[in-house]
Length: 264
Image (cartoon, rainbow, N blue to C red):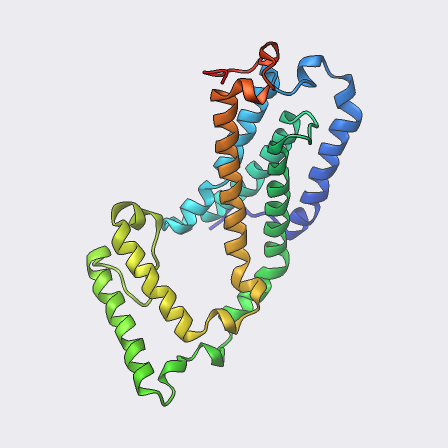
């Protein structure tokens, strides 16, 4: 079956290309633009930032699709994830009008870190992950089962607890292959949290994270943390410009040219 694919060669050139696009815009095109395209907060740049933020949020659909069981749609949404995030990052840079002296400029750092980490994971880390799935690691063996009767009992209890919770969480699922998805947290949050806690205890006893390099074990957690921080920053920025327009404009009410509800 044919499916959309982004080659490693494309990804290698993506980050330098985006840097050149943004640098070329501000060094060559920006000085010659009309004032409304050079003034932060103008209606034109407001809409540019809004569209850029939407593209960045669209890129997060890939996470929901992948974790939601839509494996056959994941390749398409991965391509959308990369392309929408790239275009959205450029539009956010245009929206900022080169102003790096205000707190929202910190969002640029999150965007850059997300892109660098994501490209590195695809180009360098993916082969290491593939090798991990293709090998039998001795440290994956249950340490608690090696001549340790109390440990074996504790491990067996965790599995039994997982099976018991899974009967109420998803009766048709198999404990050996099941993982908690966002839909489970929405429909049965307490059961999902309990199962997730048991799964983490099981991983700790098996030593799965210690069997692989720290970069492989924690890169995704770091990537997701940066993404959540970025979304939180976007939400805070939207709230401030919408409800605290006076504060954003340093209480120069004539400078408030963007759509807002209050001028607090």
